[in-house]
Length: 85
Length: 353
Image 1 (tube, chains in turn green, blue):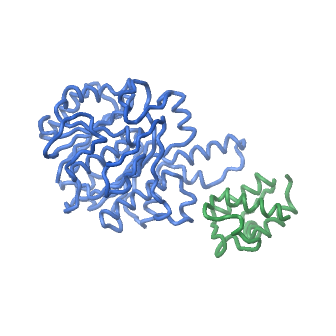
Image 2 (cartoon, one colour):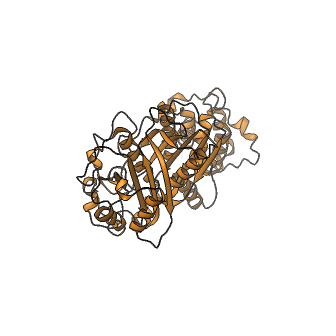
Image 3 (cartoon, chains in turn purple, red):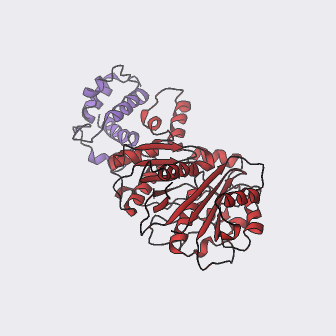
């Protein structure tokens, strides 16, 4: 699970072009949206595409993302339980 | 009709031109076929959250526009008019490549949103909270002059008092690859100091952004008056005939032109109109060139506009842009002429103010 969290942090930084953020600065339970990393709705769409492309998880309802993208910890748990690749 | 003045200039190019306290005293010469950009510190001007979605062209345009507004001592303008030949080509390449690489699946929104030609003008407006007229001209190598003409008409008709106008183009890897393949980019690197002696086909490419605040009120700090702008996509006349007519239309004689700024790029096939002007019509006046410094791109002529404006304000021609040994005690009228590959000719007349 730790490897998955590390991979997720690296992918988030790369996909969302977070130039000034390092993996160490993203805590497992930090909120990704709002006060945490400050991601927005466009980033949510990028993360939905990332789940599909990298882990074979299709989110048919974008509203699901609100809960799934709460933090790296929550994302990792969801991916571990639902991934198809 | 009101007169139109250049009240500020800002340039981001392959030279350190973003600093207006210097004027090409210390130029960088390259031996390349594509020139690198000398970047300002974008982070000083753009918040990280906004910058992370901006490709190079957007960053260049946003920062050049901020520099121009700062020099004009303005917080905002009434209109933003942008010229760009290729627009946000990096994000266009990214989006189209993703379609191919991922078999039309997994398309992400950011590169699509940012890939349109008018993204630069839009981002400048968002940053300034400018809700005024915002237009982007995409007319190949007359893109900047088209934007300039629109701005001039607005100001001359007093539809606006201040207009931000600029030219911006970025390069993408795929675009460079294609232009190398069709030999629009030189096949062999050439020292920029000897660009016009290369006698080879193609140009040395680059990217850049040049923005200006134009206004219809003269200030003590104004650079020059924009007297006239004319573009021709194609023409059956010779360049001499076209220039003579343009000068006559502006009630001047050829002898009234104190210097000519030429857009020659060292392409042996297409520099002939420039050679004609150099050797005949303007053989006895100062001739300036600039594409050995800023490279070729669709809006490179905006660098020539920057150069002409600065010469008129400072009344001196930097050594690095002198094409011949002629000098003048006073520079009053400067003519800019540009064309790319025999098409998209533009003539711009600037006057000391």
